Length: 201
Image 1 (cartoon, rainbow, N blue to C red):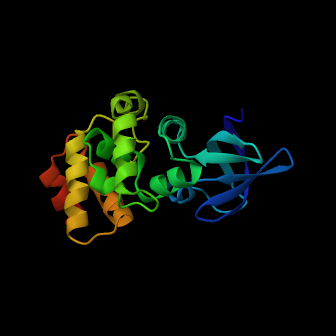
Image 2: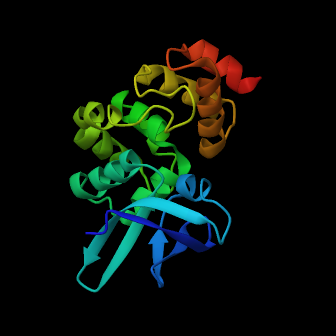
């Protein structure tokens, strides 16, 4: 199992990167939320990784944090019908704190706004992972989701703030980013109303 890669970033796209380690270039699949945190080509890079083996292929998936990698593993191992492609699409649209909050709050509507996630799949994700969100959230290191996030924010505050922005016409990635910035500025204990007001300011 390749648990991590540290080397030189040779190239990157929103969903892929090539990292050279000891003369070997590793192609790594990743969500957009990880790709946007990578340095410029030619710079040192580090990713937490997992390898998915299939009968006719194998692929490496990389993430900015161990918590994101562990969440990806939960999706593909615990949720029937959800594979790596759908998991990457889900994690590309919403950050880990937002996904955890949506699942903990049972917000199937938010999850179903992501590509490849219908209402039934969203409900299955919630059913299969809701009781595991406490296990995942406590290992998100402080600051991993932006300054101020500690993994202890009330799930409903994040989920409700996201839902409010979506109702106002924001696209999921835009709403997620705005709420993350608001929480980074206000702290983990911010209320739904404060998050919405800050996100819209």
